[in-house]
Length: 550
Image 1 (tube, rainbow, N blue to C red):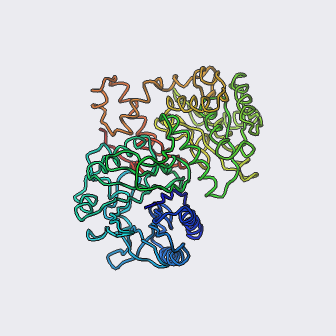
Image 2 (image 1 turned 120 degrees about the vertical axis):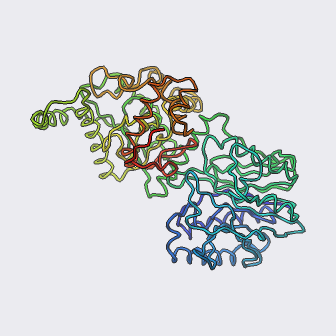
Image 3 (image 1 turned 180 degrees about the vertical axis):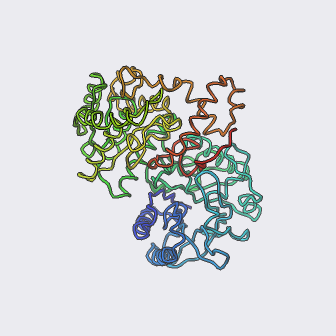
């Protein structure tokens, strides 16, 4: 029996486009002799539809798209397609999958376990499914169908989420011979290996093949890596689709088939994720070109490299905006990078504008009273002049403005509202500073040359907003800051727990205070592509006005 793993890139709300993409995938599967084509979770609506689910007209249109799709699919191939089902009940909506065959909907299955942690809020919209659903027969084989989270309680795993029910075990007890999981499982570095190990363990525990079909592509801040696969009863890979790319993989329920290469390191995986996320965010929001500030530093260099790969070099414009504090080597590095990437490059000096602010605003500020000991007013003015400059270019040319701040800076507030935080997408907003260097090195390795100049890696990080400024004048060294932030932000540890892990209390308490004091800034930042297991944004919802200290 041949099964097609249809790893496709859908767009939230594009019911017609998603239906057409699904039809093409199933037609390709049918041409390759597949008996069954499996599509990702919520295929027709895109994932996550969020408050579109509150619009009855949207749900109705999704049901019409399902009926149309059922009628036009090739009759020789059945298909499992994710959609939104409406049933009687308090809210009446289900995250569902339909078995389409012979021109109609043959069976409907409802997701049972509805995640409410991290970026998920499915229990806000959907009702859980019935335990009696989940089985269907095709070509003499009994299949057990689950939808994404339904499988995440099946085995002991670091990724396991404890629920009262185990749909996988129940389906196997009822005679499922092959397990199928339709998924929209977002990428993060913690899942890169862990999800694969968890799925293999499920197949091994229940001694049945497992078909996993995952969404691929970017929707807002979420990136879906695909990595669909067929696992044998011993947990081995029988077949696997690539990460971060669309594919219709048609395979037999047997070992010895193509297993696509996956990124070998976290840095390589993060780079591929950022390229895909940037490309899809721009494309799905209607942008074809991007602009960013090029400072000659590591952060803007990596963002430019990602943008060039995602959108093609001719569609990217880098802008250097030097002031009296900008070094010659920074401008040189920015120009060299732009030439190596073959992107557009302009130099727009802003010192004259800065001086006019000093002349006009300086006396007025002095009249208000003495400056505090650590006054950043005029440093931030430079950042905001740059932000305004870039937004003017964005407005005139219709380019998407990419921000270049990293997670470390954003965590502790070492960033300027309406300045370097201005823009439409925070490409590396979930990459700690030390990891930015790793991903940049991975880029150069893949390119086979130093596209990002070696001098960018070697110089001390600096915002260059005052004479001889270095980041470490205001922050702990990144080699200390990042592991503390990882424990506080991603691990959710208290200051005492971080201190117990071997860090100085003064350092930990200082960093924790900076994180808390900067919550209001992060609430106003553009969406950032999620790469780590806990990102700033929808998966971390801390109040701004609060006084709890861990």
